Image (tube, rainbow, N blue to C red; front, side):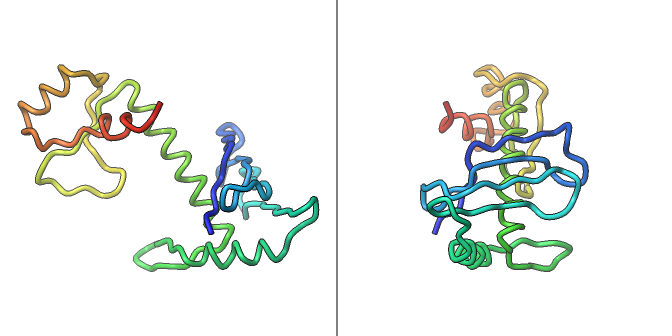
Length: 156
């Protein structure tokens, strides 16, 4: 079972304690409902429907699917609920949008031999082009990982 969010709209100005958003929920490629959060803290709202009626069986299946995935906090690992799983999908969307925004005006890279956490990299406040690439290779060698290259190859 594949749960995903599409048509995600983020409302930064409304976000206070949580991310304000609304999105369509898809399961195995089929639209089955909507998810949202008003941004004032608290749980995400999600409504799953089949033939115009609330589908509690589908929601139960989605809860079980979400529980297969984990999240960590303060050194402890927990299984997701459907609420936290949807929250993680929204967080990933926000992170991806922020990264794409940075890629437009900056060069992001990793130096060979250094260790990095997920989402961690060096930032050069220069728009990426081949002269920047040549500089990075001269400075750090041909094993330098340019994030701009790996992320822009697959996007339109």
